Length: 128
Image (cartoon, rainbow, N blue to C red):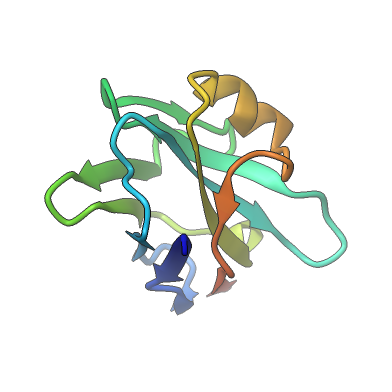
């Protein structure tokens, strides 16, 4: 059974940092697109960052580029999202998702829930 589990969310003041982790069981992240999406109450789901693990090419949403970094630990089969300079508008539920698609950048933009496996999410709250 495939399971993606996010962790590392929490509450932080503006300007602070958090690191989210996405661990997979029953599933290898090898040669997959692994992405972070987020959704705030009353807003559409938004692509945050993605990495194609085969060649480590990364993609970022415009609102987080330069502040967030996605990375992988192949040994641990874990994907990380380092979030720095957090803003109140970063407050959302953050989801990890993985799919075999090679169109990683397109998936990030479309934020389609029809692809891949998804975790249950971890809440990030940034206060001003």
